[in-house]
Length: 123
Image 1: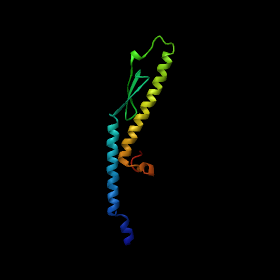
Image 2: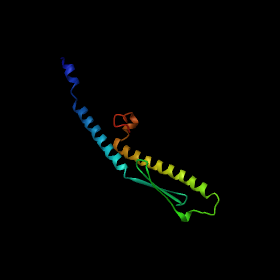
Image 3: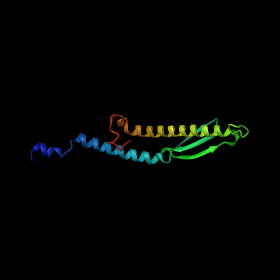
Image 4: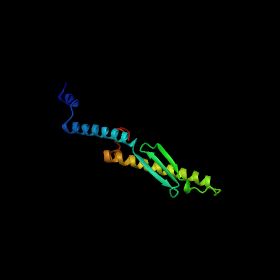
């Protein structure tokens, strides 16, 4: 075997260091994903008529309707409530996704934007 062929199997100090950094980053990302399951975002819409709590994994935890903010005498009440639900859930999902993206960005330092997302665990 030539010297050139023998070198292929060895990593330089820089490559080994980079590999360790990537492995650490992957471990940090797994920990962040696990933490996001228990972290929540709370969104209130309609002047407090509805409050939605959602996890960092975009799972709705609760929807609370404030009965004092609902006008049962208003014929459009049901339609308004449905619109508020849609708006509130969408806002909650957006905020949850933003929170998750910020967590991952703090770990990867923007590497996903350079095409390394698959290498780092499919961010």
